[in-house]
Length: 558
Image (tube, rainbow, N blue to C red):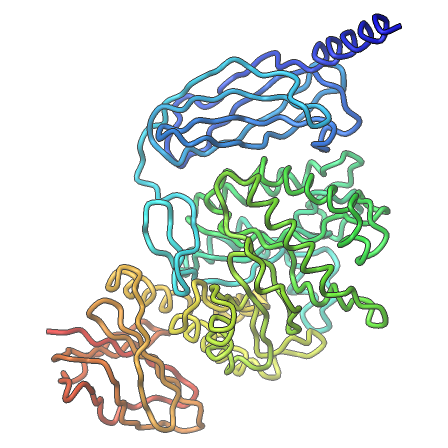
């Protein structure tokens, strides 16, 4: 009897390995180069019920870099049937120049069943900057050490077929303008370099069947929607070509049983082990397909998770469930992402105790509407409380889309501009990101990014990424100041309904300075009289600032 059992065990193990074999590996990239995508096709045979579930079948690329670092890259299923020849893909971006060694491991039910023979390729050196990472409260840094600050905007979705806006329905449905092929090049041309984008049921709906409120996407009963995958590929490649960096909001996806998921409710989504495993498989696919791209600066789990928490006001999801979920998913994402993209999530306005302290969450963020004036204080407070970089992921003069923004359009424009400057003069690596992108595009307000980007680039160059806040006093107007290297930058905003003259007193200077005044809308520089520091203070006398306008002063030592 023991011999019979042993025979069947050996037979099972042998046949299991027989049907789990890597047949062929083909490097598709002819001249691999540092920070450029390397594509590898893998043909294999394996059995599965769902090739996207790693608990059934998984393929990993095992890599040894030129410096000797060992990496594991998730691969993704492309086509083919269980038990027959299937095609899988690896998308890898070398972060080093030199000789790479790699092979593939095929696993079934959590056990390695087959490995390919070792292969090599040589990655040529380039002058590309690489992936973005957290550096300090003011800046991010690329792999090569170059500092970065995001000049950002929400461009979360393209036009919808049926928009629910009361006053701007027709504008929001203009598909010829509000598509990424039009919006992203325009945004980059205006100086923007960072944007926020959603995966949701009407935009990049990778794991929804349809029908969709967006004719760009075709309903499909395949597990991941082909038209959405192709559109996401296009957006990532377009962003790379424009040197744009995105915060990719992943959302819950089709988490309910009626879609592709396994959860019965929002609470079930957070606590059901099967739902958590379902989401991890989703994360694995996203990292495998798009994690290669330096243009993806940040993974954002949720847009306004507190609103998900209170979707049912009578039965809110306990905050600890949400914190536990984020703790597990952030750690898992760090585990499977070989490039260590920045990880974040967002709240609307209600903090969830413990959410800002999760170790593997790199950046905290919230959204602020109707109170743009509190942005600098909010950023400083959260940094002091939790010791992490902080971002205002959305802000605006008004959040209520049932109102006609044209009734207070001037206020919307002023608020848009103030938020950008508040960010530039506050310890945040990305400027607060405005909402209502179609409204501001239609008014031509987006062109204002040019002046903000111009000053941001000059700050980064002058200080090599160093920002030192300075004490400044300008009675009657708002004022902020920072020192970047040897240069000093001041932002002044006049909130009253009249031209205002103010003496500006600055602490921290120690020499003589040439002074330039910069008008951001038309990007005009004006030379002002030079000033000298006396007892550690600089006084700029009678600086005029127009009503509801801003001015930037630049002090350069001589």
